[in-house]
Length: 180
Image (cartoon, rainbow, N blue to C red):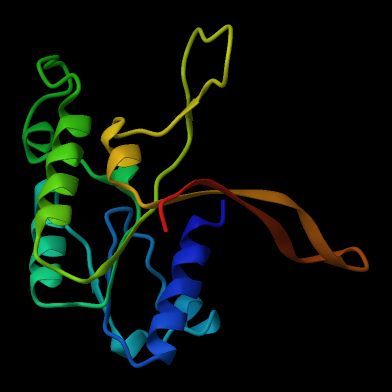
């Protein structure tokens, strides 16, 4: 909850400084009206809906090589490898393919000679059978934690009301990693 809103605020801040922004939308949830309502200039935002994980990272690398200032991937959990898209659901040989491909994509992206700010969102999922410790995990493997300079956990904490009418909600932002 709130991860896309956080990306919108970031895009708005970059645009206010006259910087170029791109939004990679594998979830296919981009809504121009909503982005405009949060202060994003949609006419100045490049939005792409990739068909697969590889296409998303190839595009992000191309943008980075051409010095796009902000590249948003919303979200890593929605990226599906091309091989998985082209296969039957019964095929089991693709176990761990998404985390491996995300690790490759992040490695390629961070290895690109660039000065772009890369903002990737993800989701929390629950591990099955966890007795001790946190059952929360992020889909796409552990490489994300390695490549990230900054990790912020976003959660919704209660409604903002005007009388009985809900007009918004409070977000809790918790920094989990900070190399900046």
